[in-house]
Length: 76
Image (cartoon, helix red, strand yellow):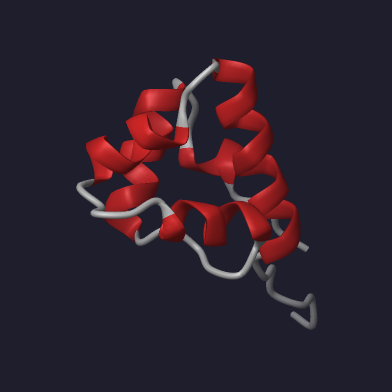
């Protein structure tokens, strides 16, 4: 089996997170509060594709957006 393993496309995933948040009409501060962050910086990093949410935050994000984790993460 020589097929390459999928990898997370951080830029596309960030764009997807941003689009999902916008489509659902959520405010960044709402996500910040649910995830327990003091500042929204982590969420902005997710949306820019500079970082990925932790597994716990990915589960929370999927729940509040009404999607599955697979619908958030974009792979190559």
